[in-house]
Amino acid sequence: MTFEPSWKRLTAATGGLFIAVLAFLGVRVAAGGDHAVQAAAQTTTQPSQTRQQVAPPAPVTPSDQLAAPQTPQDPSAGQIDANPPRTHSS
Amino acid sequence: VIRVDRTFACMGGRATVRLESSRHSRHALERDAARIRATLREADRALTRFDPASELCALNRDPRAAVPASPLVRDLVRAAAWAGARSEGLVDATLVGPIEAAGYAESRTGAMPAPLAAALAAAPPRRPARAASHWAWADLAVDPAGRVVRPPGVRIDSGGIGKGLAVDVAAARLPAGIRYAIGCGGDLAVGGSGAWQIAVDDAHTGAEAHRLLVQKGGVATSGINARIWRRADGSYAHHLIDPATGEPAWTGLVAATAVAASALEAEVLAKAALLSGPRGARRLLRRDGGVLQHDNGRVEVIAAAPVVRLRAA
Image (cartoon, rainbow over all chains, first blue to last red; front, side):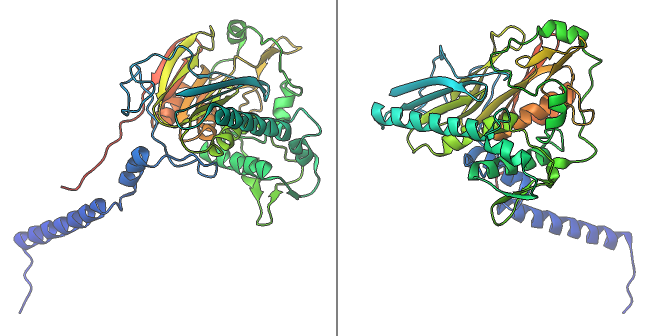
């Protein structure tokens, strides 16, 4: 039996390989194995406050305007704080 | 909701503590505020470079390569090394010599800053700061025995890192169920239920330039306006040093405010942003957002990048 290369076979093999890689990456993303997706998820779900943990991102929401309250328990709901904490050069 | 507010002098500036809770009594909140004050005062005493009796000064004088240190100073050393790495050498806590040479060898607490407009008018052409060719901060470490390791002669300046670290430590010691905003010299640690409104002071006018909404973490501002002075030769100087030149950095920004997971990280980001100049600052602040204040008075708000989440179908 002899192997006869052809454009048809090459295209089929390439397409099969592409689908296999795509499926593998899809499984990884679904399982949370993708670092970029993990980082984005941590930004909204895993606040860090201990002094040893300074690198992980926390759920912070700076905005151009005062946003709507983030939770039903938000004490600042709908109010402008007349005396908010301040940040400044020191 | 019971609220307790405290303000006191600390680390060459003002410290502010705001605690709110519907679960804790006023007495308990006042006790927690007193503990925070004690924590910040302890950090002030240990980390100042203006008191020869401080632990930091003793460390900076010590001729040994490995020096036993308190947990706080060990944390400072780790934070200084991390800050250097995080900022690729821009935030360099080992620049004590250049800072002193620029005219900041003594505390400037209570000293009136020089006029910012005059200083900006006389300043050299603006350019981003760069890292030093030799990274002394990379030699800072804590060994397994808990000793600080650094080449003798390398001195550490706590600076803003010390403030950020101190408020983070104070916040970490709070019990659950308290909404808090702990500030020291403009570095803030905030948390608890609900978002905090944080006012950003205008470096040119002192008025409120912008208001941020922060759920939890840290906010810090690094700027040249609060500690700026005129040297004997008539030139102006400030305390934010370009590591590459050892001279005060004039980058086109007078202040940068950063939001991050902790006050320490916000402090490092803010300082790195200011030293990087406008273009680099936008890149540094784009993840969690912040505010840039330009030489010409323009206030530029950097919006946080939207969080993108992929979901499996």
